[in-house]
Length: 123
Image 1 (tube, rainbow, N blue to C red):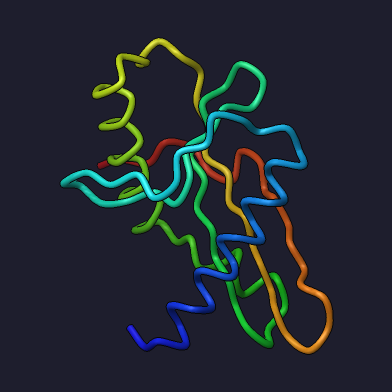
Image 2 (cartoon, rainbow, N blue to C red; image 1 turned 180 degrees about the vertical axis):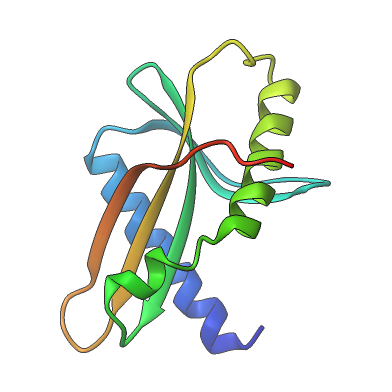
């Protein structure tokens, strides 16, 4: 990955983190990794455990960022989420997947939080 892409991703993650904190998400874990992969953020929203994928795009509308979480990515995130829940003894907790789409360009950044972006995907 190029340095420019890494910096863009870091900027998007920082913007997304600010946004979800303002929305009241708490107990945030950044970049949870296990042998199955990674999820950008794990947080609590109300009484739900939330697995959050952040997609940042430069010079493109938010739709391009939202579309980047395809079925293959959903399956990978689902596996990581199940691993997290098992490792942290929280299999009986309600959980969901959110996507935060970030578009940066010449104007102010656009940030959209998509709650319940997809269902648990496996198979």
